[in-house]
Length: 381
Figure (cartoon, one colour):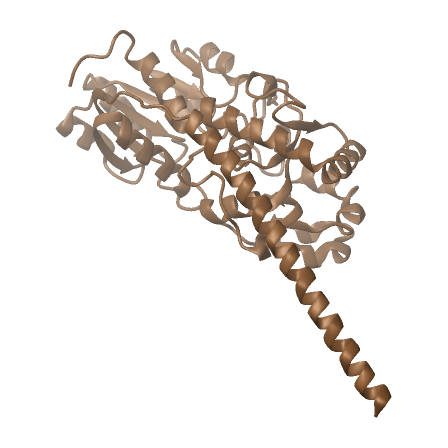
């Protein structure tokens, strides 16, 4: 009986001690997050900018392709709504040319346009209505976009190497304009505890990504890792990491932002320009520009570990506001380093947040587009 009582007393002490430790851990986690969130709010305040409303009527033609393009449609349309005096929104499934002739907008902006009948683009130009297209997936579908671009007055592309392609095809006004971050969705958040991880990657398992992750699967299986996307069951050692993979799941922007916010390190890996499985890029035009995910990750004030694209330094400074890798071993080494250097990790992430909100939001991108489409001083409303 004495031994049993002693064990019960000891168990109660252990339980109380465990609760005390858990309370202390929760307090520390809450304090750390509060301090971090305060820093983020300071950055957001310093990067606030009021854009003048332009006295123009824009007809915006959304992709109409559904998810995962619908969040991009919404990001662009909601941003436009704040920046122009009149906005009409339609999509590529509608009779756009007839609508345009009825309302006579100052500019028609077509997003993506891969499923938009160029008959409408030609009809609008014949009616004297200016048109612009913003390609969102260059250079992966240049076999298609190359046939579309000459039908528009202005061509905007998120890939720098495609500017010369479209000029060679006879397009006189071609401009480099990457996508960006939509701060309404991608911004510092307070994710659930279940959404917090050391390392995460969100995206599809294209061939180049599979080959790379095959070399680091064993390492990632030893970490608090989350991988979300389709086709990851094709990993050679999938069984090792299966419990850390959410297969076949498409997340909306808010949930994706929560996952980014909850991770200490978010991996970014671009698609390959020469992937014959999915691409329509027979000219093998290389890709040197950062993908939209680059801006969305950094908008969440988390450390981004990205593969290198040669035009990345035009947007972020490596090892200052973003971190790069060029091999599986370098990725592993840098994950280890930054998981064990918390202060440095947070400083880089915070600088990435500042750079993104200051330079790489959709408001900034559309302001740049309008400066091209409507040069000169703004006229009063």
